[in-house]
Image 1 (cartoon, helix red, strand yellow):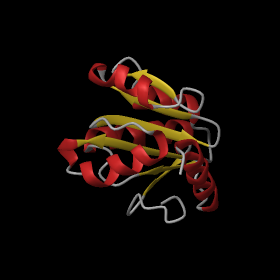
Image 2 (image 1 turned 180 degrees about the vertical axis):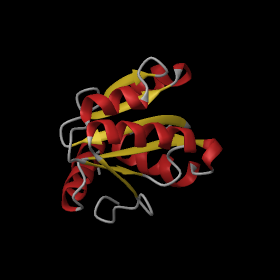
Image 3 (image 1 turned 90 degrees about the vertical axis):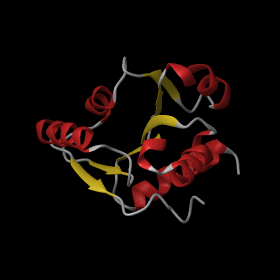
Image 4 (image 1 turned 180 degrees about the horizontal axis):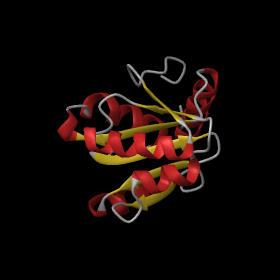
Length: 143
């Protein structure tokens, strides 16, 4: 299935689950390379081993470090995805732009460190959104 169609299926499943956005990260240090990389690859086409994605009903943002900027630009459909480079565009900056009060942010397992989670939690209290940690990133309808 084409990546854009997979992204739309994910958005449909998020809405069904009552979530307004999802945050997932690819990072070998979490030991999630096989699971979350393939999942993010299915919806974006990005095959790098380090990146973060925030997906809402209207936006899909992929943040990568400098090693993957060209690769992401080559692999990801720029009409569906916004590609940014961190640390210039970090998770908190993007979440503060896309999340609103009374919304729910789903977070994939193994996607954040404790420090990142605490930063997200602080932002969620400031803005008034809820964080929901997913048990898996397996949206059956997407796969």
